[in-house]
Image (cartoon, rainbow, N blue to C red):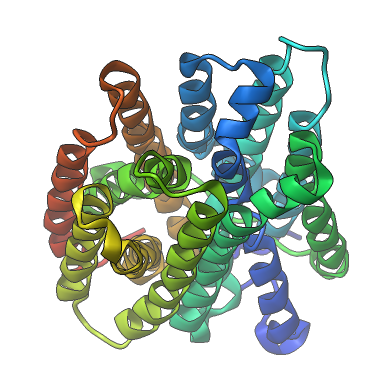
Length: 405
């Protein structure tokens, strides 16, 4: 007989060792952003080696974030059919295939096709993982929601840091951009292997209820406020992953140093990601935290483009702390505002589907600004607008209200 996860979790932390589950969640999360930052770290080298046109570079930096929105609504359906942990494992298998496909060597002039195909597959996989993780936190870590939200969002930031900081040195040592991108499939395989015991333990567990009976999150003002916050933070977040390194290189910083600066900025994102949710879980209202994170994010990005170059480490550091906290707080709102795990995954699908789908426009617009003007300077206006939006929606979403299932 199938047991509803709304009334009983798939497996209690005590029964299935919540520590091992936590380790699995963290290690999975460490693989969810290398797709974005690894490509950006060696984008000039890929363009030089393949003759990739500007529109192709813009396409490859925009598609992943767009796909996070396109495939996010599919995750609740799959979770209902197979279970959240099973969907997470399947996403890792798909991600491995996508990362390998992206790195397949092809004759000169044909690099765009495997790059695009691998990026599409990988983006779909990450979308599925993104959506089920908040539900897993709600379902299997009910007594540790703040801690686990902080840990897994910190690990996501760490994933971006690894991709940004290690890909250029890997390219230098391997002498091949194909290998420098393809190597990121290895840790995904290791994370998938660690999930096998979890799948065996959960094989007879209930699937998440995503029934459309009851109130839909589409009718909830709170759900829309969380979604608006996610749209605005995603516009900056994925633009940072895709274009911060090229922005720094345009300002005269060499590739290796730019990679280190971006990596350090993302390491500081980890600090914001860890402490933001933990602090948020202790408060009745998170409005002030959300606004502060939005201001730091927008200000840091604008200063990274136009601030004095001598203080670039400071500007990108401010960006990192703000962006990490803002991303983590947006995701934490799912668990804090949802009353059940099945509502959490429905809100997650809605918020990430629209949030990443619309938020990916930031990456595209930034690429178009550079293609048309030859400079990233005018993009500062975009980040000012997205920061203002994140602050407004963050204030509303942070109020002490819940989405009733």
